[in-house]
Image (cartoon, rainbow, N blue to C red; front, side, top):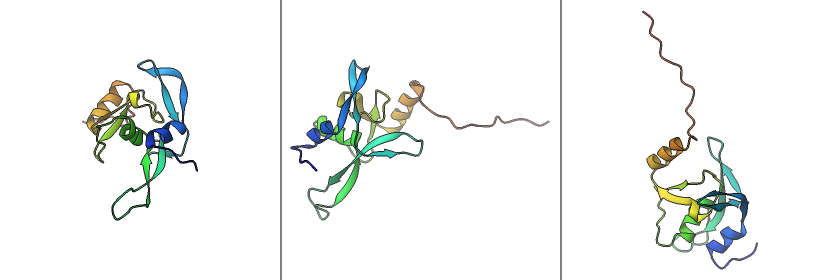
Amino acid sequence: MPRYANLGERLIANSRLGDVPTYADQPCWIWIGEVNRNRSGMLYGRLSMRYKKGPRKGKHYKMMAHRASMQAFHQGKRVTPRTVIMHLCNNSLCINPAHLMGGTQSRNVRQCVADGRHKTPFRREATCND
């Protein structure tokens, strides 16, 4: 496995440019490494990382590629466990930092509904039997 100078180089090496510009006239950086399928069937990039300090130093853990991209390229932006990374291009495998934005879960759902991607489960209409 090759060694990279930093996380940004590793992310770029494990992605490819998308065919067409999709957001802000920039193409997506499509993750070509390991992927993870969530409950709704969407694919997200995933990579293995190591703890750098503390009692777990040297141990491996998995991190979502778009969250790693946000940490690597948006200097000064803190990514906490409660932070949701929104894909402005609506491509879950995209790791282009220009297409990513931090936010809350409710803001992410509002964006999803506004873009027409929200899936509402089938509901039966309530009927009134008089």
